[in-house]
Image 1 (tube, rainbow, N blue to C red):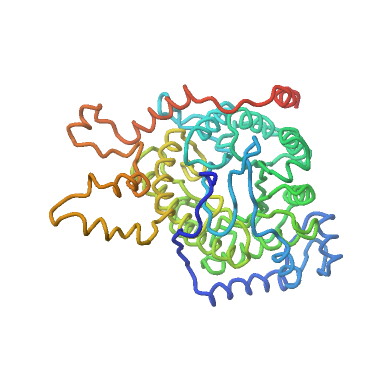
Image 2 (image 1 turned 90 degrees about the vertical axis):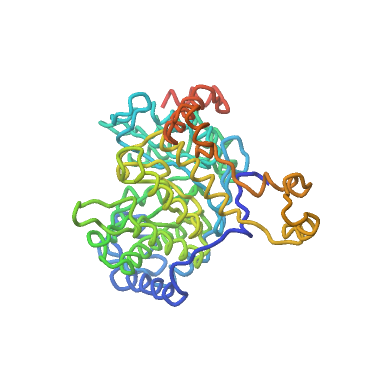
Length: 474
C-alpha cells in the first residue's frame, strides 16, 4: 500500500453532534433552499435548475429537497487523487486524513531575516519544493501570491508548482474562466490527455462563492467547467457567524451547509457523477477585532460538524488545520497549529488544508510549514492508533521476563519497536547537556535548519521540457 494512504480501520473518531442534531441541521438546510432559495447569477446554472423542477424568480432559485437528495446520492463517495507521475497518492474517503498547504498568501515571513515582506511568485516555488520534500505534506496549494495585478497570475503559480513538486495540486482560480480552461489544458497535457486526467486526477480546483446565499457567475463558471470535465472541485462557503450568517453556530452551519448543497446540486445536474468535495469555512466572527480568527475553537467545532455531515452524505470533505493568527513563530503558533491539526484529523477531515498559515490567513512561513510537518507526524501516529491481538498483548513475553527484569533484549521488542513508537525530527528529547552541546537551539531554530537543508538538497521529479515550453508560452 502507498504509505500516503491512511489505514481507516484503526482511526479514532470524534463526533460533535448526536444523530438527531445532525438531522435537524440537514433538514434546516433543506428548508433554507426550499423557502429562502439562493441567488444564482448564471443563466446556464439557472436553466439546469429550472429544467430539473426548481422555482426560478429572477436570480432567486428555490431548490426542492428531492433535487438535493438526488444530488447527494449521485455524487461519488470516494475520489482517488494521483500525483503528476500517475501514482496513487490520496484516497479521499471516510475519515482518511491528508494534509497540505493553503493558497494565495499576500505576505511571507522571510527565511533569511525573519521579517514580513510581500510575497513573490518565487515564494510559490519555494513552498512547493519544500512541500515536495516534507514527508507529511500530502498535497500542495500555492501558499503565496504577489501583490498588484493578479489577472492570470494563477498560470504563473501553476508553473511554479508543477516544476517544484509532483504531489497532487489544489489550484485556486480568481480570474475569468479562460484561465481555468488553460490550466486544465496544461494539466491534461501533463497527464497525457483529458481521459488520463479524468482517470488519474492530480488537479483539484478550489472554488468559492459569496455568503450568504449568493452564487456569483465566476464561481458557477468554475463549478460547471469542472463538473463537465470531471475535474474534482472544492466548492465551499465561508460563513462569519454574526456577520455573513447567524451568530449561533447551529444556524451558521445550517446556512453554510445549504450553500454547499446548492453547489453540489448544480454540479450534479451539469454532469451526474462528477467529483465534488464538500466542506465549509464556518466560524465565529470576532466582534472586538472585526476579523475571522483562524485559531478559534469555534472554527474547529464547526469543522467537526461539517465532517460529520460529510459522512452522512458520503462525500469527501475539505477541512482546515495547521494555521494560526500569530504573527511570529511562537507558542501561540504552536498551540493553534497543533489543536487545529489534531481536531481536523480526529473529526474525520479528508483534505486538511491551510497548513502553515499565519496572521489569520495573510502570511506564510516556510519555517512554520516545516514545524507543522513535525506536528502532522505526531497526529498521524495518533490516527494510526494500535492493534490489540495476541501478538501485541505480549503475554508470552511478559511471562518470559522475570519480575524486575527488562524487555530491551527481547526479540519481540526488536520486532515491534520501530512501528510502535513515533520518533521526532525536530522536537528535542536530548538531555539538557546534549541540548546545550548541540547549540541550545529552539524547535523553530531546528525547523529553519531543516528548511535550508531541504531547499538546498531536494530535487523534485523533473517536468517534461515540452510542458515547460507550454507553460512559458502562456
